[in-house]
Image (cartoon, rainbow, N blue to C red):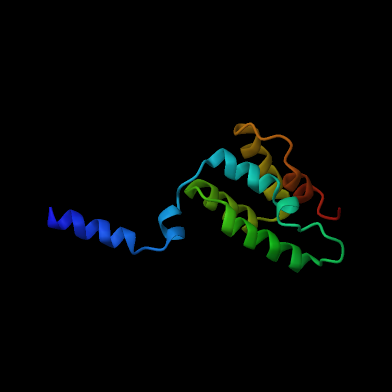
Amino acid sequence: MKLAGIRILALASLPLPFLLAGCGNYDEDVATICNVESLAAANEPGLDGAQKITRITMFLEGHVRSTRGKRLAGELLDSPSAERALKLRAVASAEGVDPCPFADTAANPAR
């Protein structure tokens, strides 16, 4: 019984983001990734490419909650645009997320 109390105390002392890591719905994370540009205000006029990527990365780090979603976001951000578009479209389709503007941007980065 005493050991259980210690475990509860140890869990209670962990920061909330640590406790929530891995919690969340993958399909919601896919929708967040698909809409990240508007959600992160990365389409504001005057932002250069580095500023856009910084906004997108910071937003995803704070809002993608499932383990699978975090893995997907990391893979996408590390992929070349063409690969990112194909992978994100495939995942979005499998999860029933449509449209997926971030995949469109990745497919046409000059937009």
